Length: 63
Ligand SMILES: [Zn+2]
Image (cartoon, rainbow, N blue to C red; front, side, top):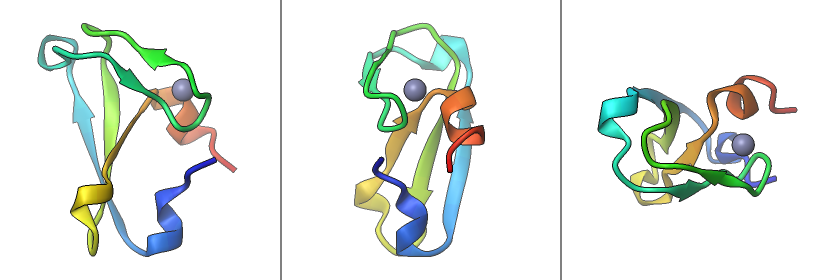
């Protein structure tokens, strides 16, 4: 799993369904997050380029 917390503090942003215009790959389960599905974006504070989109359940249930 590609857990961004190894990089230190992270900022979690909630993406509402209407804001989800593109599909993403979730690093928690390696499955797609389809467009139109609410999810979270996890942004490492010190490395914002490494932000990743996660299913909300995958993020909350990460190790
Ligand atoms: Zn997932």
